[in-house]
Each structure stands twice: as C-alpha cells, then as structure tokens.
Image (cartoon, rainbow, N blue to C red; front, side):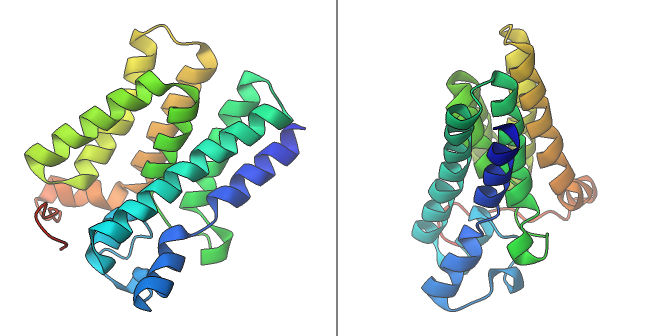
Length: 197
C-alpha cells in the first residue's frame, strides 16, 4: 500500500489552502499580493493575522493527516517518511496551481509533529526566537528546518527520521532560494509583528 499512501499524501499536500482562503476571504489571488507565495506569511499581508493563523493550522493539518494515513495504509517507518516528503512536495508543487505554490514550512512542521514531536517543538522554538529577534520569517524558517536534522542526529533518532528531517530541510532550503539571495544582499523583507504588512 506504499504507492496509494504516497499518492494520497501528494494530493493532500496539493490542496492550496492559502489560495482558496484568500479567494473566499478577500476575493483576491494571493499569488498577486506581497511576495506571491501561497502560504501563511503572505496571507498575513493579504488578509491579516486571523486568516494567516487559519492557513498555518490547515497546512500543519495536511502534514499530520498525510502521515497518519500512511501509517494506516502502509505501516512501515520508511513509508511514513516517504509520505511526509510527498505531502510537502505536494504543497510546494501543487498540480492545482501549475506546480508552483508554497514553501512547505507549515506542512513540514505538521509532518514532524506527527512523527517526532520533540524535534517539531525545537524547530518551533528556533523559528519563534529568530523571527522575534530578526523579524525575518525566511531566516526563521530556514534555521528551524536546519534544526530538524541537527536535533534528530544529536538525539540518536532512527535513520528514517534523520533522513526525513534532512529531506524537510532540503525542501525548505530549495523553496527559499530567492529569500537566501535577498538575505545575502540585505534586501529581504522583514515582517511587522504589530500589524499585517
């Protein structure tokens, strides 16, 4: 049942929650607002904090749901790890949005929350600390993703979890290439923590 689990994971990940919610909530195409990213941070710019929080929770739920379905369908640890990668890939390259959508941070968090809650907690702490100190969501996302394989390796996690954490970081870094360039050149946008930007 590995193949059905992976297909379901990709399809779940492909649900463009921010795009649909922005359409319903504000009647706008979120891809034409702010950074153009289909995710919670850009939803903050487009529709405010409540809508952003809702997108975050729904995207986290996608990761959790895909992992739980893989556990029921396939059972094996490696199947769960591959399903975690598939759901994030679906979020990042949704067929519903011409294979160009979000950056996978919230969905990656949902995956790790389902398979390794301590690692997810560490990543969340890193993210919040970096964003509060720097006001760069992209930097917080990258360092939080990097903390996953580091923490899993340091805690002696099984190989499949270390593989999954490394893959989560690689996917997040891949989708943040433009942000990395802007961070390097000092042109990255900071998020305003007191009101939507």
